Length: 330
Image 1: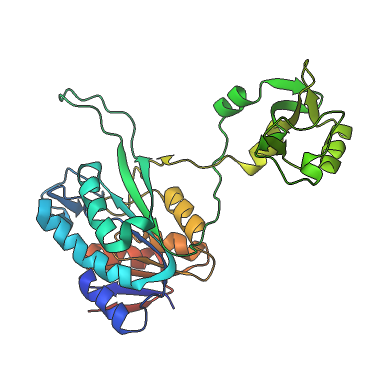
Image 2 (image 1 turned 120 degrees about the vertical axis):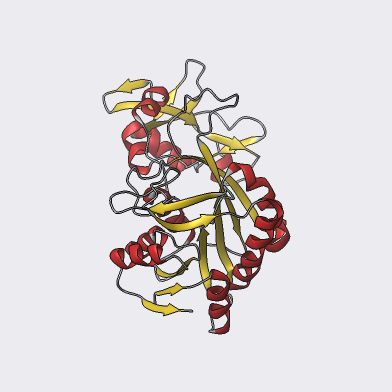
């Protein structure tokens, strides 16, 4: 069942371990405090990210810094490591100023061999301040996994700029580009090493598909021959648009302009993470639940969820967004 636990997450995580959840969590996403030294507040008519009014209610205080912050976070990561399944995935969202120290700590607990990626997230528009420094528009997401972890491709849509740059040729079927028909490595005989239209693949290479398929593509007009007689496969813009493009490790997901809770994260970004690293029915855990956005996205995508937060403001926001969970206060 879905669960929402109110209390210090060190207690909430221990409760989960004591109640049968050890190695049962398929996906963990956490967005802990960033060691900013800032109070984050909620007012009657607005949510504060940095500035706040004296009448606003404190949602949470981000007061820990330096080694004290790393030690505080490590206590929780040790428990999360025990909850993560043998083929689970773990994402930690953090500020660039402390992210590298956090990664060293994560390597020691989760295992450096289980580190998969450091994702750069573009969080806002370019800044134009006069401070003697580069403008900061990014934070980072550290991705770990273990075993035969779940991986579902979540393609990124092509932009108009992409299409103009990539698909410069045109025929009666539309705009297209071409890709090689051969790949590195010589095959051990078989159809990928046979002769096609009087030529074999170049030395040290093989056809990407069997010659029978190449013949079919050529009959369909899907092969373009260069002036030197080199065959290449036509790839049309419409086909690529439907599939989307491979998502890279720089993400452009700006946070909501009018958040329900301080530091609420972009829902499309969370959807990418949940889709990529879990399947329907899997359990998703966020022990810094905040706005409940991770839980909301997990619920929409047919996953089960567990959220933990000790803030009264957080619990209220989550209650306003979701109602299909068992509530526990520690």
